[in-house]
Length: 550
Image 1 (cartoon, one colour):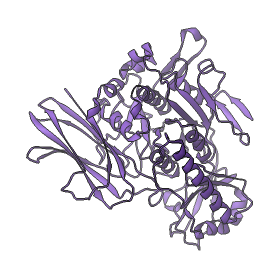
Image 2 (image 1 turned 180 degrees about the vertical axis):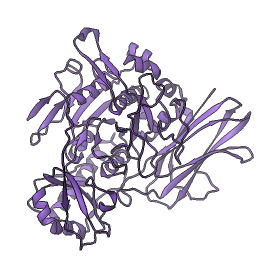
Image 3 (image 1 turned 30 degrees about the vertical axis):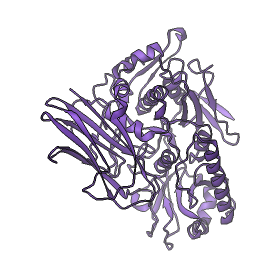
Image 4 (image 1 turned 45 degrees about the vertical axis):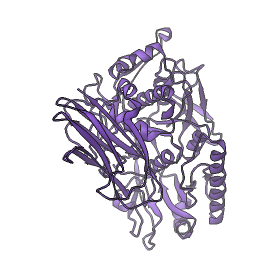
């Protein structure tokens, strides 16, 4: 059943303090992700204290099984996709059945990922938590369990298109997103009767056992991305409302072969820590090559999940004139994950069509900037089809070809600016970057600081010439625990013929390294990428792009 909401209203709810009685048990697989102080969340050998939950009615368990294939799925191959589906469907179902859990409200076993969602009535879980958690902890088929409270997702052109060099293409409709499939994962589904949407290419996921909401915020985001006056009006839209964990909805998006997933929402109670929502999106990007674009959040403080995903393109917002970062655009976190990746127009995005004179919207927020970026990526995927299933290449070039906003000087370890990331996206710069200036590698290095895993020469060196360089790769997610620690790290250097280092950056809790550097003299320079850390079984899929200009 669907109910029409004029707005996705975010209500203020009271907090109830609950104490979970698991003090005597030491867990290694169970992670609490309730909105609480971080020290009380992780049960890896610690005691649990007072848990703060918003109006608790249910507890959601996201269970990761040990049945991960650990491979990259070639989604262009039907047989390969079916092999993954058959494996995960069988493995997840058998694993859950072997646990013997009872009295749960619902269960969903993912078809495309090694995850199971199990939902309990809160009171039942509270009374039986010890038995439930002990069962999960003792199973050899379970790798990790995330205990989640009620998950709340908050909805967080032409003038703007001109600012990023896309106005001419938009007006000519030379590229309009044709052949690109975009998933919109949101706090509600699109209103298919709205004049900006009706008659276009869309499919809405109908979940008969759940109460879906037709949401104006979702419809606005879809209108920016691919509405009648949207950026990529001929793209195919797949609209899904996320309930609890997004396993079911993302399975549906994978099944339909989407190229991009737009997440213009943020999980509530942002605390600045990478959590299971971000880790799940990292897994999807790594395994299926889907480009995930998420908003930074509108609090002006902590970046929200899934925007803290390492493989996720996280988007902040500029002000109306596109000259600075908007005050509301979040850019902080607790783990040195420099976010956002880029910023985009997101203040008073004007949705207006003369033929629809009674319809006008002004969209503001990092959610609008995210939708804006997704629409631009769809245009690029239509023009350059090789970008599909290459999220590391898209992120690398998007950052390399972005435009610096003036006045921002503080950088993270990986070279990205703390407020603007790599800067404001620039569609025309992206299009103009020669194919030869973005290289890809599948890397398992020898971890010697003397031997680069990638090296190329830059012959345009001269006073006044600036270089922008981005190295991006995909992390698997879920390597150790929720706060993923990367065994592989990269150091990126710009050196001259004599080996003198002129610029350097390295990753720190990140899968992106960025350098912006004015060259001091006429000379040949060399980009060198070194890998350090502990050898892993899976290869890193690396993309290196650079751009020089005056």
